[in-house]
Image 1 (tube, helix red, strand yellow):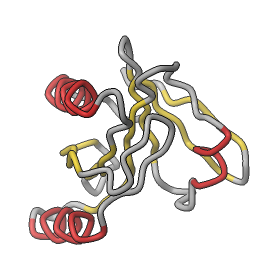
Image 2: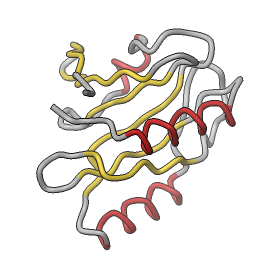
Image 3: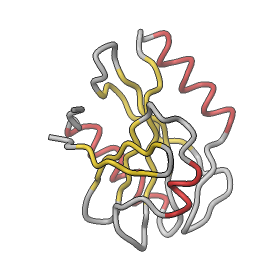
Image 4: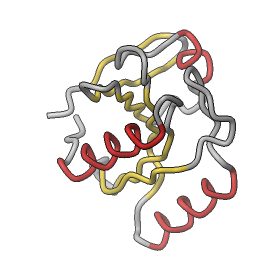
Length: 126
């Protein structure tokens, strides 16, 4: 199970606070063993308090940076500024990468999930 390093936790919570009342979003880099290495705070291209769209140019730059570091993009994160850190129906329906981890930040916590085939499995983030 992935461990959520404190510096990544702080970066996600800071990005969520800066984007509120809209959802924040970003991508997560992992190493060859699946360990979380970096969080890329990205622009929500369609700012909304209930959904997000990752800016495609920023996605490309994050993917390029991860590749130069020997990592890969292995997840995404976003916030629920007015809700809980549980996947919404929109989150479940739009989770297109079954091997990615999805982190959701609420004002008080971050929780992680695998979202596959319409089902969710919570991750222990250590």
